[in-house]
Length: 85
Image (cartoon, rainbow, N blue to C red; front, side):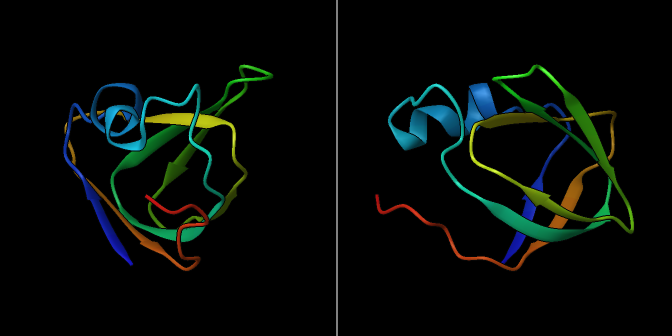
């Protein structure tokens, strides 16, 4: 899947309400960053990881995220969502 997040996007503001307002993202993500900077925060540990152009990544459930800076983030996500709406 090709995912695009515009500057100012946050999981808390833009995604959480669409998922029924869980405490954190319940989905496991595996992918590749094509543009921009995405900061992912694990809620349990408060550890932040910056994903930038050229990074392959694996993000476990239990996170939130936001676009860092004024460039749109484009990701290729390899794993389909693990939850049903």
